[in-house]
Length: 188
Image 1 (cartoon, rainbow, N blue to C red):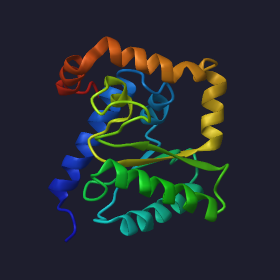
Image 2 (cartoon, rainbow, N blue to C red; image 1 turned 90 degrees about the vertical axis):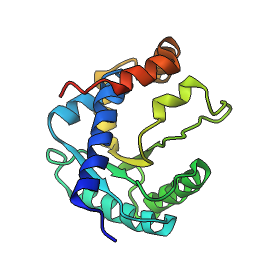
Image 3 (tube, rainbow, N blue to C red; image 1 turned 120 degrees about the vertical axis):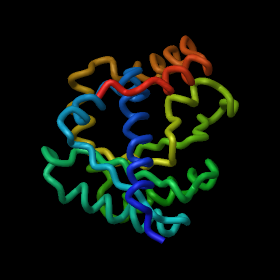
Image 4 (spheres, helix red, strand yellow; image 1 turned 60 degrees about the horizontal axis):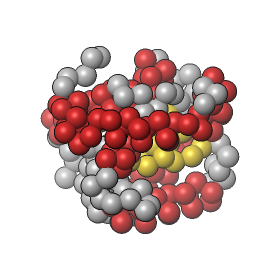
């Protein structure tokens, strides 16, 4: 059954809130603000309920992004509210997503970043605050243009330090600080 307009709006609101409060508000990705302000982010909600459906939606979105003018659509957030709730299943899907990227001949042109409500970095414990840098309200496959990443890295010479800076930000904030930060309204 297709999502109702109200459900779509709720999912989009939660995703945009996460983007503006966490990703942009905490400066977890210094490149995100520019595409957000320019309205160059495509938000797509997958109605898939299994991995196969997600991969079909991903294929469509990869093609849509590669065909689009970067001035209109520079990046895509494929939001997956009804599938891949288990982080291990999500990781399996990510493996197939990257394989699809290669099979479509898009490796080197696009890449896929990953966000999930239970995101866990390898070697970390599930409750480690550092995992929250990649935690989102829903599983998300973030499709990015390599050329845009290269330009952003040139403009941000300390790009290699982002991961460590994010870890420090999350440690300073702590879980209670994160919870409080995320319950406050977005500024835009």
